[in-house]
Amino acid sequence: MTGPRMSKRLAVLATATSVAVFIALGMAASASGSHGRTDISDARVSVEGRSARLVEQVDYRDGVTRVADMLVADGRPDGDLGNPDLAAAWEFVDSTWPSSMRGDLKQISVIDEGPRGLVGVVHRSKAGGWILSLDRSDFGDRRLVEETIIHELAHVATLGPNQFSFDLEAACDGVMTTVGCAAPGSLMAQWASAFWPGGILDASPSDLVDPYAATAPHEDLAETFTAWVADWPVESSRVRDRYEMLAADPTINLLATQIRNQLD
Image 1 (cartoon, rainbow, N blue to C red):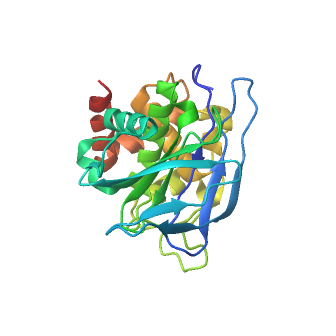
Image 2: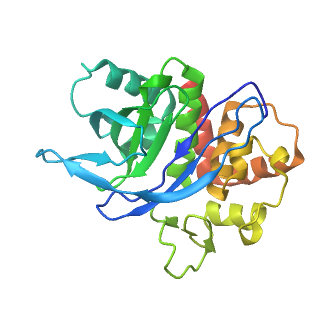
């Protein structure tokens, strides 16, 4: 571990349609040093309601309760914030998610699994953009929730439909990872080629920002981005190499600056 932080994350990267899509499921190591794992399973997204834009209902893993949903339009809540859970979720978003990227946020969902369970997750929205789900059980740990949102923003920035396909069966002109194809020239393709050649981690897990980064290339990128933005203590030259790749990418470098400004 690189600091006192202890968390579990679920990074869900799925297309919001009624067909089965792939999920990446993992848990970070606890302070005791136990290692997490990455599973691949199915997820489905259905829609409900009869408004002009439908609320998208995500099928979460067993044990996760869906509490409330709020559509987001033009970067603002599409409705009142009378529900205290939704108000709290929006406050976390408002303090972390850069305003320039809020047009990509289409829905916020509040869920409940228990402290340090799911914490946060993003899905691609059927309306284009993304759905962010946050676990209200963790709202008392501000640092954990904000760092989880930073992690999810890294997925938003690097795994959009123009950069990544979750179709494991289609031909891949870029770099195939454990969950899909990174487009040629994309940051995810560069990352996988440099640090996960042939799909194998080219480092010891102890040389990464935390054990969860060792579960898959996209989680390595997202956890490293979080560590870089949040300024976790880092000693490994392997991590510094990763930071240099992030800093060299204009889009991800700008995102890091914007998040830091939001947090200040």
